[in-house]
Length: 370
Ligand code: IPM
Ligand code: MG
Image (cartoon, rainbow, N blue to C red; front, side, top):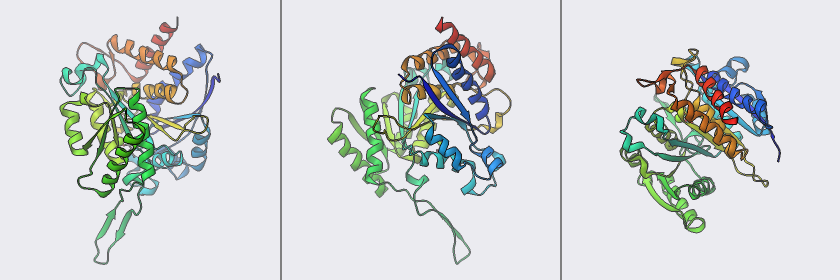
């Protein structure tokens, strides 16, 4: 069993460095207290990379990400880079990294933490035990489709356009990820599309249906239009097990789903590529939340989404299930003690800073390891 892993750390912008900083402390706890060694190398992505190199991600960083065993990212972007041309803007660094790493499957779990039941935007009975896994296609669709751009028209107007395009194989591979995940959960997939209005989504529905019939007849499949899905998410969210959807729909539905759980500050994600012959896939792990420039530098951001992203790395990239559970238990224990960062603060609880939450989780880890 190899017990040394190389992790590329990309803190990024805004609160990214703060939440990644606490996660690095958790990672280093394993270096000190177990026989596992995580070798960490840190680099730039997003606005900070643009400031240093004039591009939101360098070839060198992409190369490092391809060579590392996994990568952990904080968040990117902020008002400082608002007037940077779109092609060089911070999000484009992240989009390039996802594409060059071939990370077509984005796993975004939305699950309820019992101590936070009252922080949800819905009444407790609607969200208690909520456990949804959104599988978002990540390197196709409108984000990458050609043609795209802003053109000048002869009449003095401009024309802006993007293309929503998917090929059969792009749909097949992400559908397989969703069906395989469903088998380990409640065995149900809801494929979310807009087949009533868009040709490409008609193809999406056909391909997903065929993959289910040919390869996953044991998994239950239903289809849902994306507008209805958004409505159902706030109406009866517990009806869902795995949601499979295209890139932009996944971006939107995952933000909506995240709020059901009380705070977007709690939710991790994993972006995975194709498995190689040895069964290994590239993986990029990041919190679902953004760089939150409004609270950056104040030390009040919630580090749990990023720490849980590391937990997903342990599970999906390293198959370290016991270690993953250990961190989850430590987080639950800290929450059960009433510790809360500002985003999940409620009356009667103890308000903690980013670092205090990190301290508490590390203290719980140490207790659990004794
Ligand atoms: C996300 C973000 C990104 C996306 C942005 C920053 C490009 O919103 O990861 O959900 O749209 O994919
Ligand atoms: Mg988003």
